Image 1 (tube, helix red, strand yellow):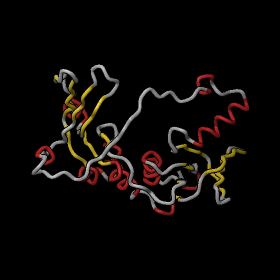
Image 2 (cartoon, helix red, strand yellow; image 1 turned 135 degrees about the horizontal axis):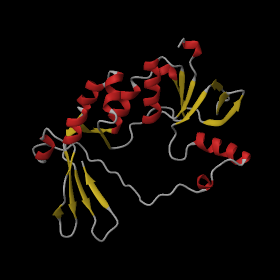
Image 3 (cartoon, helix red, strand yellow; image 1 turned 135 degrees about the vertical axis):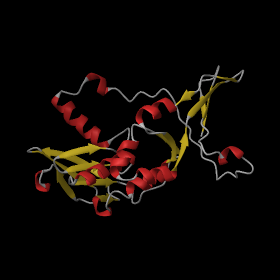
Image 4 (spheres, one colour; image 1 turned 120 degrees about the vertical axis):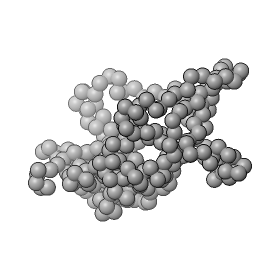
Length: 232
């Protein structure tokens, strides 16, 4: 399609989801803009497990080799039952790798975020201004920012987290029309709390497991306590 005939996409949120969509649209030559309320990208988070569901997309974007350079290859998740400590059947990623041709890797979230951010030109991201409102008229959508700027597009994408401002605006409109499903009136259900910690750089001399070529991934499931501990 000619560039002028392609829909313009407005993306709210410059996290991994928003940036990944931006990188794909950039590769496809589809016009887009990303809006991020933070003034700069902050290197937050610990580690992610990335495998065959995403790696073909990284290859299409031309960043597959760059990803391998920052990732740590893994073949198993070793699971243990607590009290008494006993080994359960490990989860083996190798059959999936044999079937798809792509392995499983652990990667530091800030490094992955930085890698994907490099695929989006700086002028495609508007930093430092919150989205105050989203309006629709004549098959067009308009984003209203806190600095009083407005941007018009054809498609709005909410990549701004679990309590998405985009979804809240859409819900308000659907409620007014009486078309919001009953289940969407309910609060988001959470049945667990996730605590994430990150060590300083470990010495291979003191911790030999760090020097292994494969990632060491261990899970311990609580016996009489409602918790699971995972080490990467």
